[in-house]
Amino acid sequence: MKTISIRDLRLRWPAAEAALATERELIVTRDGKPVAKLVRLEEKPRTRKRFKPEEHKLKMQKVWGKTRLSLVQDLVITERQKE
Image 1: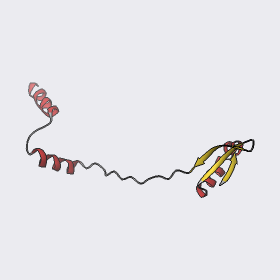
Image 2: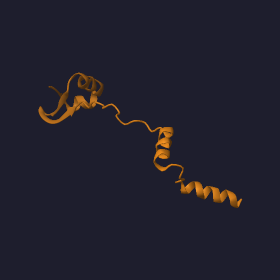
Image 3: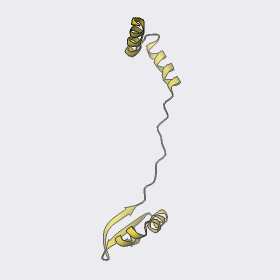
Image 4: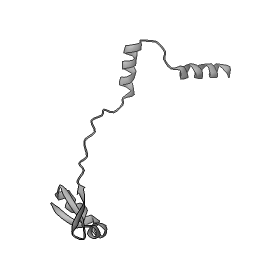
Protein backbone atom coordinates (compact mmCIF):
# COMPACT_ATOMS: atom_id res chain seq x y z
CA MET A 1 0.00 0.00 0.00
CA LYS A 2 1.38 3.34 -1.03
CA THR A 3 0.93 6.57 0.92
CA ILE A 4 0.54 10.10 -0.39
CA SER A 5 0.18 13.39 1.47
CA ILE A 6 -2.77 15.70 1.00
CA ARG A 7 -0.45 18.33 -0.45
CA ASP A 8 0.97 15.90 -3.01
CA LEU A 9 -2.54 14.80 -3.86
CA ARG A 10 -3.58 18.38 -4.60
CA LEU A 11 -0.41 19.45 -6.41
CA ARG A 12 0.44 16.24 -8.24
CA TRP A 13 -2.90 14.68 -9.08
CA PRO A 14 -1.74 13.11 -12.41
CA ALA A 15 1.03 11.25 -10.57
CA ALA A 16 -1.42 10.14 -7.87
CA GLU A 17 -3.87 8.95 -10.50
CA ALA A 18 -1.11 7.01 -12.24
CA ALA A 19 -0.09 5.43 -8.92
CA LEU A 20 -3.70 4.51 -8.28
CA ALA A 21 -3.82 2.77 -11.64
CA THR A 22 -1.05 0.39 -10.54
CA GLU A 23 -1.90 0.15 -6.82
CA ARG A 24 -5.25 -1.07 -5.52
CA GLU A 25 -5.46 1.72 -2.96
CA LEU A 26 -3.60 4.80 -1.70
CA ILE A 27 -3.49 6.01 1.89
CA VAL A 28 -3.79 9.79 2.18
CA THR A 29 -1.84 11.30 5.07
CA ARG A 30 -1.84 14.60 6.92
CA ASP A 31 1.19 15.33 9.11
CA GLY A 32 2.27 11.72 8.63
CA LYS A 33 -0.99 10.29 9.99
CA PRO A 34 -3.46 8.45 7.75
CA VAL A 35 -6.73 10.32 7.22
CA ALA A 36 -8.29 8.73 4.14
CA LYS A 37 -8.02 5.87 1.69
CA LEU A 38 -8.38 6.21 -2.07
CA VAL A 39 -9.61 3.05 -3.74
CA ARG A 40 -9.56 2.37 -7.46
CA LEU A 41 -13.03 1.89 -8.94
CA GLU A 42 -13.47 -0.68 -11.62
CA GLU A 43 -16.20 -0.06 -14.15
CA LYS A 44 -18.64 -2.90 -14.47
CA PRO A 45 -19.70 -3.80 -17.99
CA ARG A 46 -23.26 -2.95 -18.91
CA THR A 47 -25.46 -5.94 -18.41
CA ARG A 48 -28.71 -4.32 -19.44
CA LYS A 49 -29.85 -5.03 -22.96
CA ARG A 50 -30.71 -2.10 -25.19
CA PHE A 51 -34.36 -1.36 -25.92
CA LYS A 52 -35.41 -2.49 -29.38
CA PRO A 53 -38.78 -1.07 -30.43
CA GLU A 54 -39.39 -3.73 -33.07
CA GLU A 55 -38.96 -6.58 -30.57
CA HIS A 56 -41.16 -4.75 -28.07
CA LYS A 57 -43.90 -4.28 -30.66
CA LEU A 58 -43.85 -7.98 -31.50
CA LYS A 59 -44.05 -8.93 -27.82
CA MET A 60 -46.96 -6.56 -27.25
CA GLN A 61 -48.80 -7.93 -30.27
CA LYS A 62 -48.26 -11.45 -28.96
CA VAL A 63 -49.69 -10.51 -25.56
CA TRP A 64 -52.51 -8.14 -26.58
CA GLY A 65 -53.28 -9.26 -30.11
CA LYS A 66 -54.84 -6.58 -32.31
CA THR A 67 -56.28 -4.61 -29.40
CA ARG A 68 -55.36 -0.93 -29.58
CA LEU A 69 -53.97 0.26 -26.30
CA SER A 70 -52.88 3.78 -27.11
CA LEU A 71 -55.22 6.41 -25.73
CA VAL A 72 -52.96 9.06 -27.21
CA GLN A 73 -53.54 7.61 -30.65
CA ASP A 74 -57.32 7.85 -30.11
CA LEU A 75 -57.00 11.48 -29.03
CA VAL A 76 -54.87 12.35 -32.05
CA ILE A 77 -57.38 10.71 -34.39
CA THR A 78 -60.31 12.62 -32.87
CA GLU A 79 -58.40 15.92 -33.00
CA ARG A 80 -57.53 15.38 -36.64
CA GLN A 81 -61.13 14.59 -37.50
CA LYS A 82 -62.23 17.91 -35.99
CA GLU A 83 -60.00 19.85 -38.40
